[in-house]
Length: 118
Length: 108
Image 1: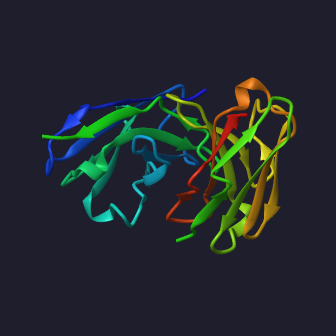
Image 2: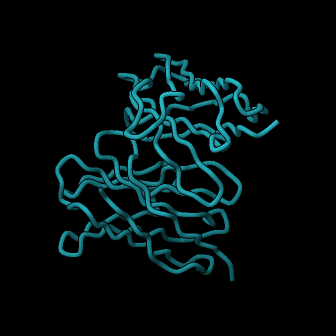
């Protein structure tokens, strides 16, 4: 049973870079069929897929953030990470890490609230 | 990009009633790669249905999904108190992945 846990700062200043890490337990981040993702949810609003990564390095980005996002995988730590540059208030959201083991997102972290404010 | 439109925005029902939620896609969803999630306040979404009609592990059989192409439905046959939540559809047939705007099922 996979378990995912997000970590990172809860407050980021405008124009700075947000860095979040998702720690994976109960399974290997190098599993060939798994895709690892970040999904965000602004307060009181719906879900938005941000980006996905396979341990091999293949990445997929939402066009709305593609120019500002970098994903990476650390197989030695069983973690994957998100960097989102040039933060604005519109990036304030709960950020979830998630895993798709066969297509849909069947495992989710509990989410971490990131507020962009000076 | 596939745009998913969910209706209604809010569904007011009583426990024991049947709930029918709609998700319409702006273009055909390949291989019916359409999922439904349930989200309760302060919690992460939970996968209910994938492949348009297959229940995920541990999901009660009062939840059922149907549809193909551009029109999909989530049906809750008899609402239990724990079913009052927000429901999202999502396509996972290709990038970018998209979610619908959600339907809130509230107690009448």
